[in-house]
Length: 232
Image 1 (tube, rainbow, N blue to C red):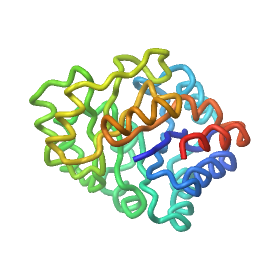
Image 2: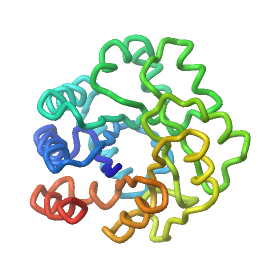
Image 3: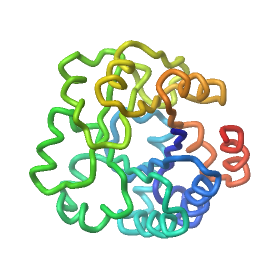
Image 4: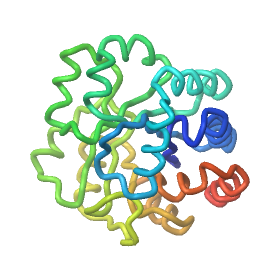
């Protein structure tokens, strides 16, 4: 699976719409849309700055999801996922979030919600699959806990640090174990910057997602289009 993360509503709604549709039109299998939040976790300076700007401009969930819905109507096979935080969904209401957006989202990524706590949101009415994380230091019992996940893929964080790090990501037995237990594609994120990085990730786990490098170009559509073209 080939995927990209972009910040919802950044730098403005029109630019976000163009980038969202460009990714879908290019045939990438999934798009991860970040819902801006004032206190992000694990985001490096590029994504944190973009999120701060979007928050300052007052972007909201409804506006972002309206663009996602329009994109899905044109490209129904694209797997659309959302990356956001537990209190954003909790504040919106788990059941209402599912009712309003469950038809267009294949999964949600909630970095401040440990996999063993996914049940908590499910009990409150979240019916959209929660995509679990695995890291190079995930414990066996935590990987075992995701074996029955209903998510479309598992997200492997290949470095210990924030997004946009200069460090090279690593593949290890944690990603392999997650792939074996769940039978799902393991999408490698963090540390993927070049087509060569992406090819290695696909060969190792079956997928990649790029965030910082594409968010850097989200405000310049020509540069954005040129960058993603190298990953087709």
